[in-house]
Structure formats: structure tokens, C-alpha cells
Image (tube, rainbow, N blue to C red; front, side, top):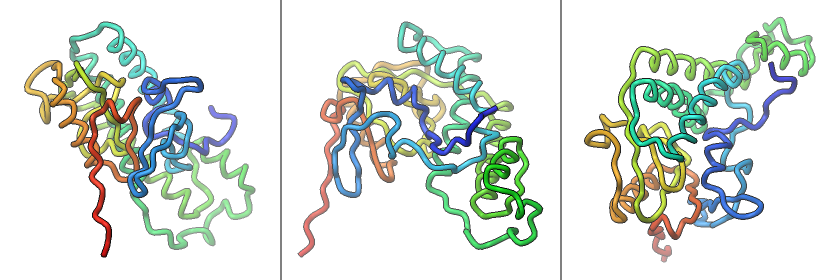
Length: 252
């Protein structure tokens, strides 16, 4: 159990972002889309996390699935080229969590007062309420806590679906150029692994199995990833990702 409340919750895990980092200290190149501003940032920087968006129960319960996926991702980065049903299960479990966290980032539920005046936790301190929340008991009745419970439930339901279904995934490898990463992961089932590797669900993108992508295919892939982004994209080297930024014409 967590000793302290987890305030900064990553969408894409810190370790996944770390595989794209370079330099000392390790950083990636982040493009803030609204301002077309390029920033070198570490994996614990603002664009990569949200503040208390889902409950700490699912934050804790997801750790085994994230750990299992990271072990598999390390193997893929080393020499694993063929995925089997067990690997698909690991990937599907991870994507169930990743996609719902990505969706939660940009969903705003109504923030009107709901249950504060009726809640049995109205007399408890914030630390006491946080301690109950870590145990899965939601007593405060304030909108933010109820929203965290809702978004946590969405992740649990997504995991339940992943346990019943096990679609195949393939490994997409860039022979030239490098891959780009969006801030949205729920629109298309694909997972960034490293600057040269993505996992893509076969039924929606790859013809079969794993695939080595040409330079032109990587550029097209990155353009598609970029179109799905809402606030930012990142890469180890944005120039090497071959992305052409379309600037808006000046207003007359």
C-alpha cells in the first residue's frame, strides 16, 4: 500500500518514456502543439502526467500489469521478434489501462456539488479521507473524489474486457527514421516501445505478424500519430522522426 498519496499519475509510464530519452540528464524532445514550442523535458515533466485523475486503488492494482509489460518491452528491445498468445495477453492488459488513462486525461465530468453535505466523511481530515481512499472507501463526497472513482472503475472494466478477449499484436520496427509519440493512446491501439519500435494491434493496422517499416512508412505513421495528439507530441529526436509541422496561415 502506498504510504503517501500519489499526486502525479503518469499516462504512459515513466519507464516507457525513459526509453526515448537521451543525454545527461535524460530528456526527450517535446513539441507543444498549440504554441508550436519545442522543449527538452525529462520523463517526470508536466506533459506526461495528470494530477489525481483516478483512484489509488487502480493505481496500485495496475502495477503488476505494468511491470509484466515492461519486462516484455525490454525483451522486445533486446531480441524478441515473434509474439505469441501469452505476449498478447500481457500487451492487451497493459493497453486496457493505458487507453483508459489517456481517455480520462481529456474527459471532464460535471463538477457541481453532489454529496458533500450528506457524506459521513465531512468531519474527517484530508489525510484521513486520503487514507480511506487508498483502501477503496470514498467518504468525502466531493466531485473530484467521485470522478477519481469513476475513472478508476473505467480502467477496471477495460481490464475485465481484456481478460475475455485477446486480439493479436505485431511489432513494427523502423529501419530508418524514428517513431513519434502522441499524448493520446485511446484512439488507435498502438503502444510506443522505443524510438525504433511500436506495438500495433494486428486487426486494425498490420497485415500479419511483425513488420519492418521503410522510411516513408515511418514518416506516414508518425503523421498519423501526430494527427491524434491533442496537446503535445514527443520523440527522442523530432527531426529524425521526419515530421513536417503544418503551421497555420497568419490571420489578416
